[in-house]
Length: 367
View 1 (spheres, helix red, strand yellow):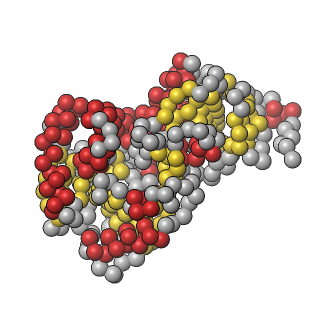
View 2: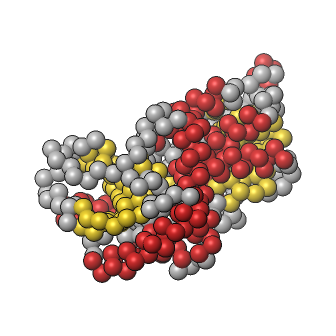
View 3: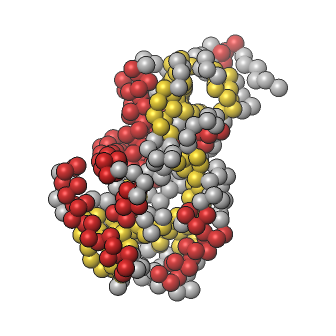
């Protein structure tokens, strides 16, 4: 049965919008925020399918990072050096925009440093000689000296990035949502979009049809449901947090195996996630859940590589849904007169999400 609105609803809540954003993650909310700043008299709404942001914005590991050297070298086997440089600069500047817009205290930012962790001396010896080259890049790109350095931690070789840090994704999104609401933007939770017509009509599941001059698809890992021909595939990421440990030597954010495994401390707990590369096809899904092969691998990694032994437990576990493009570069473009897209953050949402949102808002304003 179609939704039957009253006269009063049509003359208030359901009046046409200037902009509707689909997705209340970091890209969607940032897009709405920056658009409203430029267009203060416009009527703007953000529609979110869940009670909370449902993709990865509140379900990630909370890494504020520009990427490990191992990750960049792996990407360089498929892309040009110039593309990697652009991505590094974009991630750094995106994090600076995030901290400036929301405030470091509000997002629980910890300037703890990032570490690339190696179990194999052979692998370390292949990556470590690149430190000088990447330090030259960082000087060239962001005017920072001696960003990377080699060392040891708990008997393992590591490469440190002194500019990286950790943050609290829940606090980050609370602060962003608060700023968006404070601008007079409507955030409609539990409003799953079924369809968007090329005239700007947005059909809500079990709800009304909303009208807008412009519609932005910013649902990232779920955008393929609405735009199946777009080069964005969902990718599930698994995360777990241990019980509190009496002694936890791992302080900071850590990357391993080209960034596929990542871990950090939350107080005296260890958060660890990733290992999606063990079953990429199986993890190309927008369904939440745990892949037991991946979970077992991460548990073994904690017990053996991080030397927890067997005397530890899992207090929290969850999954998040990311959106990946074939090039790892987000898609930000106008689709037709009324519709736009900004999605495909490729696992870099914290670093570039707000910058992508800002760019999307400028694109929509200029259209």
